[in-house]
Image (cartoon, rainbow, N blue to C red; front, side):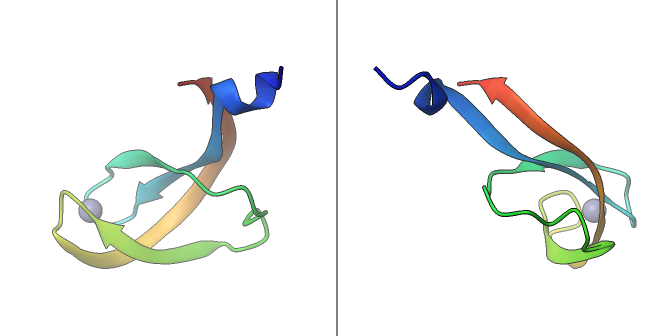
Length: 59
Ligand SMILES: [Zn+2]
């Protein structure tokens, strides 16, 4: 039994263009990255995102 597999761990990111917040499911530490350049599903293009928090939630 491995209870860790029942959780999604990731980072809460927010697009600085439209304000849409979503969870990037990666395990590595991006806390020190102030801005993440990533695809935003609202803007439908790559935008900068700010890292709001570390999250772990049930699947
Ligand atoms: Zn956006």
